[in-house]
Length: 238
Image 1: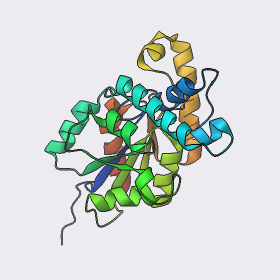
Image 2: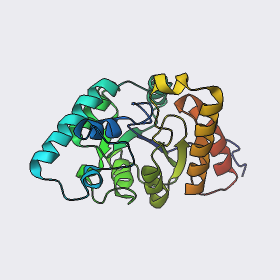
Image 3: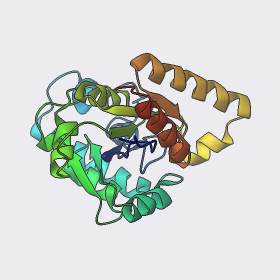
């Protein structure tokens, strides 16, 4: 019986939201925390870490309001995101986004994306990243019955680790995610050597994490998926 030489098709693509599909540089969380604490200089991944204690109810409310305000300002698709999603829609390739911000902030960030694109918040699903629960839940929501051929694309290390823990192929985004942490204007204002240094450090960090491939941003995703498809065709597993 003849064997097909066509590369295997992908089953589904999962995307991070902030720092991937929207909000170049993943600035929503650090700027939201900075609104609460003007002396905040980064390095905190949550309100709990910022306060170094369990937040009071009124502090949670202020936190969510701050994030919602920042999200409104940063709800702009990253380079290549809009065209990519339209192409995926035409290919009937299931896809969804994942995020761990409060639901209102996530919804505001996603407002600039197509209505058909589904989303999953870790606030509604099991354990937080890097546990794989949100990845599995997103795939179940898309009615994907197997992990084979499922890919996660993100610049957030903890989400990428969740994807690895879930058994997915993973693609890290070096330039537009939190490891570089620069908004579009600040990123382009850097000298080329500074950009290269930040990009290199982010790329190395993502490969050390164990991701299967690293690109700068979504404009480079097409050739990257082609490469992953060839690796799958050769029998490589995530």
